[in-house]
Image (cartoon, rainbow over all chains, first blue to last red; front, top):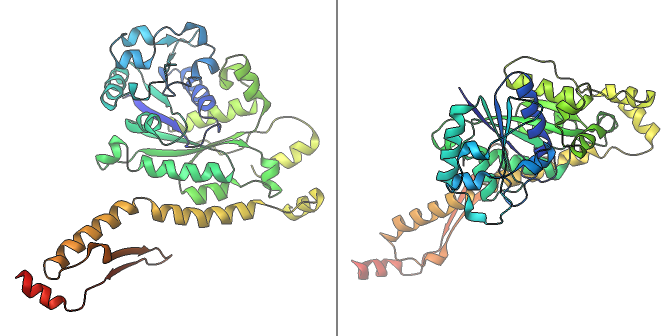
Length: 271
Length: 92
């Protein structure tokens, strides 16, 4: 049965789009049929992170409005045959997405894919609400930083009240994905620890993505982190997260980048 | 180990401060969440019930929620005009 998963955060710039691309690619690499849907109308970027920016013809809004068929708007990844993208529109019409329209697109995607990953825009407005509206589960991307944790808490509250599942009295399964984590700084007491964040949000942990230059390198060339350098620390952290999403039990470790002795000493600490 | 690292870095740990600030802030945020609707509803219903028996100035009905760690209190403050019995008599 198809799973609809929203990647959300409240706060901007924490790594929603990077994570959607990386999780989507990792799922596809494991043989799942995946579509990643960009809900950031007006500020689409998932196409860019996936390296498909020049192949966009039709988008989510065209499909919602009946201008294009779903099959015309879906873009198949050139590297992974199981990975597809449904891009957002660059129009700035805020009301172009309707609840019913999104509902029918998601329903159609459910018949064609194993996983539907919805990349939410930042904020708590209409776009973010619609991205989470039909979700079965949610990945809440959080940085170890006070404003990000606060916004995550707010989003968790919305997932528990504003989704179709919540309205039916069911629960959206929630997972926290901590990104840009620096275990050295956490060990020195300069950064909120994993324990602090989980205790505050009381939501289970899906994975810990270490701060890494690989993330920027991958987006520079338009390739998901998990595809660009499969041996890198963030790539293996995303792959672990995906295995947990698929129900496997994977020991929680913070993959460490192989660098200087000092970094390695400090890096091991909080793992 | 942590203390040693901290000494080496020559800085004080700021994470505990972040953690404490967040805990206080979120307790407050979560208290406010959904509360305007609940308090508004309570206020309207209390006003409706009391108004059946006493003539009230709706402005003088205050409903307040105080969130505590163990228990929360609901405070209802209704100002009744002097001689309200007469207004009932008049109403009846």
